[in-house]
Image (cartoon, rainbow, N blue to C red; front, side):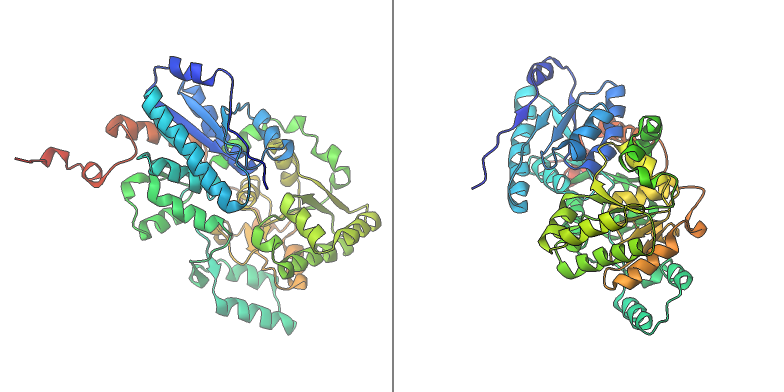
Length: 457
């Protein structure tokens, strides 16, 4: 049986809340490392404006490398930790229950209107929004509308059939991925994140959309256009903060053999890639082929990939690779600080990942990205030519796609896609909505501004 955990509340939190005269409690929800990094600029912006800000961590990731390191880096102090535990369904229910009680308490006992800010496509976002919505509060969805676009079945069948015949032209493949007509929506991958992000939209009061592509998806799905605004992505703000700290980076002290080399920076963690043996073996063996070809490889250990390596009996093979290819291969822990990640990827020959955030980061710092998935929920980067899909079906094809991307000048663009001063734009819009309407949650008579037509006589 799993051990029951209790909610952590920072000393003095409720006393400070009681003393605050502010009407709105701006609640920044975090859980994973990308959450923290992308929500940090909003936290900083709201604090700068003197707003009442409550930082709530669900407890999903709470070790130094995946949480505490970046919290310290961005000067964020957790007010409440929900300390969730258990299987994924239990984590869902615990966030809704524990956060829901906190939101009700804020309103009923402290006369605060909660304004939760949820990020992206995470478990935390799709549960925090339910805790809010069920108590008649709407959320600010940061990075709203992102959807996976996947090349269609015919495209992939032709790709693999031609590859098996020895017919593969990297440049043609790269160009073909930039044809929007090959894509379809509806994938459940990344799992469960694509479910998560779709499920948030119905409880959203303001959609903070990163790029025009996802504004269109939200409009196609019928959400009110007046609540949707393209603001960019807060990762852009976070990177600007982190760039200033690169002189403090110890990344190349941790991985010194990568310094000055055209290395590939690899992170793999998606459930569908790590929990499906066939896929993970394709990815692992593609990495092995690249190492054996003399490519400099920095493969960072994440919980999911570590578990997969152990589960599929690859630990001994990994150790042999580390021993035999000391010169060009390192495998080690995730970097604790965001400025260290930015330091490394900005000097890499390519980023190889299944992470959504890392596709954005590569675009911003101007490094080619290879996405080890069948589609992408950052399709804007593929259409822009800074990212290429490497479907995890054939390890030789994956390796060939990666080789073609390393330092590929076609994939390096002068301007990135994700804007600047994004957090400022989000807070400005939220403030204007609160000033006009007093809240973000609105029934249709309020949304359509029909109250002045009421007549019950």
